[in-house]
Image (cartoon, rainbow, N blue to C red; front, side, top):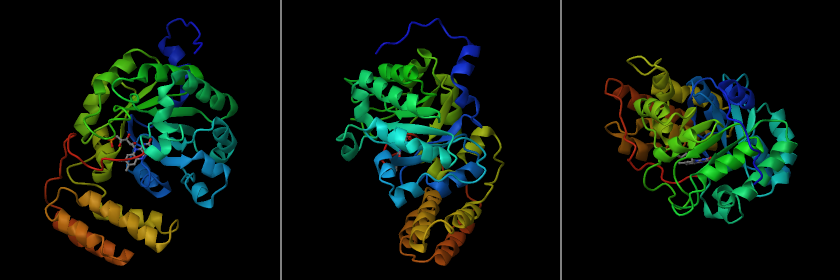
Length: 351
Ligand SMILES: Cc1cc2nc3c(=O)[nH]c(=O)nc-3n(C[C@H](O)[C@H](O)[C@H](O)COP(=O)(O)O)c2cc1C
């Protein structure tokens, strides 16, 4: 890659070169999650003060072929309180260029490219984490997209293909010189999948060696850990995925705005989620998404396993809300469940 020789950047240069990050609401972001961070969940998390919101991964090819289902995935809710990005994946740079105007028309603030997906079906086509194996090719790929779209471009990647192929420094450089606005790093390799722990030392090292904004991600399960990692690693923001599913209050707690009791309550959150889902999905999907949220929020409370078993038998919204009310009223006085970062929970995903 022909990186231009540069003089060291001052703080003012950095602000001019990376204006998008200046517009984040706060540095505690929701991570993109397929099947989860859809239009409705993003709005819910917007109301829970997540710093930046990113869609689940969406196929650029699917958008080119105008699949109705894929198009629905790029909708943006009205009057978002912060930046909303649409995450795309695909091996053909021209597909991104073709679909960028549609993404922009929906009201997205940026396009994020998934360079972290470890799933076989995705990497086999040369997308996701496979793009990290050749930083020069990655640079050309990103540069082509960057030069041909109007929306700001960001990327989310892993630390490399494997421990023997830790290409993160080169890939961050490629993203920087291609004109990306930030790089989010899930601190694991593709080969690692979701095993072991995210390497925050490496994320901190990347941050020290570059001036492009770096977002750290991996294994954050508590507000304390989020704040500590933000400070100690020096990253510009942290991204929380699985931890926020069981604890949607984590963003407010990170910001110091959560009081002694959970506000909104789990039941209020469930009801609000229903309000958001109802106009968007059919009953089957609405019930599915509601049950998932109920079960995540119940995790760690006594009786959660039985509640989960029961929830997945319930066919109707009314019953899900009614049983949710019974469960969450029953545990309302109990201490909030806490989780540690090594605990296995949802050990698979697209990034
Ligand atoms: C169910 C699931 C779906 C995911 N889908 C995506 C996705 O669509 N795009 C992406 O970049 N990362 C995806 N990821 C990865 C997360 O964004 C995040 O990088 C990873 O879960 C590590 O962060 P965490 O420990 O805070 O969950 C997914 C993860 C899970 C568990």
